[in-house]
Image 1 (cartoon, rainbow, N blue to C red):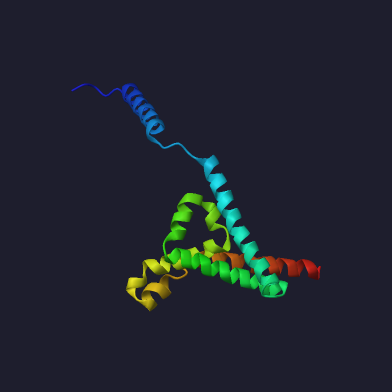
Image 2: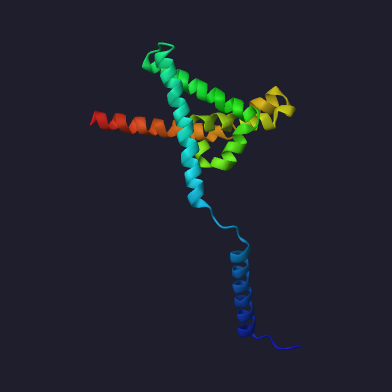
Length: 160
């Protein structure tokens, strides 16, 4: 049995680490950040254009006031997002567009409907009901909490 040589084992470890780093560089897929940003921009912009078209339709054809048209647009976009999630199209859009499909309100609809659909076989209460806000719930809680903190700070500033 050979005596233990710490320098030799350190060098072996360094060589192994270097080989591993080279292996990672060779096998890791290249990042497509540029094209991903363009896709996200295009899809997010398209969703916003659809929203604008719905809003103009509500203002012009349906003769709604601006506030009602805004609410109508939000409801229609949520409905479209939920429907596209239900028929399996929104997931494909999300894979292709990334964040461009998540940020608009249609992404919120997707984040509610998607977990509910995954658990629908468990029943309405324990499946759909229990998992409806699994993804969107933390977002809502943090958003509402932040708005309350902001409101309190604004109130205190106005008192001074």
